[in-house]
Length: 333
Ligand code: UFG
Image (cartoon, rainbow, N blue to C red):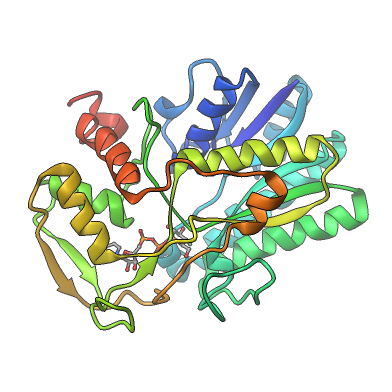
């Protein structure tokens, strides 16, 4: 039996594939390589390149492979882009998930672990955010992820689908052994941009707003190491395999760090000056996002072990230093 990983060539999906293979699972990967990298796919995984919206392609994979459960990372995930091109997001994220769920139903595959986001909450009612708080997405991206969750909820009621939806806060870091890491084109995330500045690929990092109602005026986020995040997926998979009911869990560290704290920590870790300049606020950025991950700890038994911001930045730095041009540049290029 195999675990099917959709989006297994992407940043987070590729880490899932490596950790599943560490645990001796047989893994099948589907990725359209639009934002993912075929070089990020573990060599022991069976890789099908294609788009989940193409029903025949997906049917073919389900016919060939003996799939026991699905991990679904396949989505467009840039908040800003989703505001410019919402239909691209509804097509790839929502329609893609519909085709997937239809195919799973036809093949009697009834377990799915789903990659969701803190963006489903929008500006939070309070922090730390618990799963029972109001969802009110402020971006098309967040809206599509919420729609995907809702689609699974109704499929659970009608067809007995079992799902776990994991709402990620800010995922960062890289596999500790350094084979894979974060490589987005273009890069928009804070930690990779800070490290690209440390590598002098950028002159300075622009801080998007220094006038927020926080201690140092910059936005606060909850950063979670990608390996800890994937541990939660593996626990969610076992939970479903042991008969667990469909659930939604936040994944974060219960701690917040400001943009300035991240830059300062990166200066310490890298020993580089990392120039920073003040800039305008980025539209749609909530001031503070911090998860309560108590539910995942209680029900899944999740125990994140690499949550310190120093460890996250050290592992990310190890990847960026050795792959300054990402996958295309090759090691040390
Ligand atoms: N930031 C800067 N300068 C930059 C880049 C980012 O100051 O050059 C700031 C942002 O304004 C924000 C913080 O750094 O305050 C973190 O920004 P990221 O872009 O790294 O992450 P986001 O919090 O915007 O987004 C992340 C995920 C999204 C998800 C969202 C949920 O990347 O997919 O969390 O809130 F939707």
